[in-house]
Image (cartoon, rainbow, N blue to C red; front, side, top):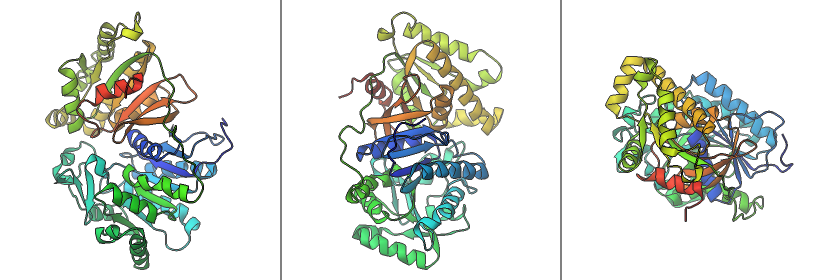
Length: 442
């Protein structure tokens, strides 16, 4: 498929679906027309955009598989003509001691090293101050507490028990890991570049970069303009559009986030067990209809998919009056204790896969009922849902909440989606997202 002969400027690889939309949202805010692909497109695909974001589902898979998928994405992005590359992961650095951040960053650095010449080097900066993620002296804070005291220590797949990201990353790679200290960041881009040069001289290939404000992220973005590869959360991408604009490669674009209006019924699907999503589910249930998926019931073979669809049909009246349909929430979100109990019964990986399969099947059934607008909470859940709906590409729209934009499908059945990382969004996010997808947001 060829949509344009123009070449994109920035090529991005994200390790999950909501992380991809989070990054794409940041680039749209900077005036870059951005398209997100679900997986690596066919080799002959050409897309008109300033930035391309390839969404993988590689955060918690085997490290070798994550590396292979990421390198395939890089090869496709290089073929598009991208000038710089970005590896995006979660702002809470979700990973284990085996990876996958370190192994993927190493592989991408090795593949790109001929571009820049000299010692391969990249920063690692998951900071996102707008959502309370800051880094100081290499330690990641979530709000006012260290990462390992934020609730992330209870994550079912990637429990984060160490807030010192230099140590965390060093356990994942044979490369020497250093630190771009706040002292340098506070003095501006030139001081950061000098710090990078000193680290390179000492044999450092990757460095955690301190950042406690958006101003710091703009500084880091400017300082890294000449690095072939940047890694981090979406926040450090704040400063990248301006680099291309200063180079005369990017025009101002006031309509970078415009999306078509899509008609049809709406639904909210939630699979994340994060604190934020638990609060969002609780807020919705106070005034709106909701149906809970019980993984143990699904494991016993009970018809939970059919029950959920019947519940949605009853409340939405989708087959008769789509425009007056009442949106419902279908969720598997649970407390940490409930999640652990389910994992003891089914196994950690099996429990997660069962929830994803169940919500994916429900999403397919809802589409058949006339649902065209989906709000989805959770990175793994979002990945399962977009794959179930056969979504291949998304145009990125305006921000709903920090890190979460509205999106619309490209080259397929028109669907509107809001894909939310588990920990993102205000307590009323679900209602806010539905208003955006309906086109009613101010």
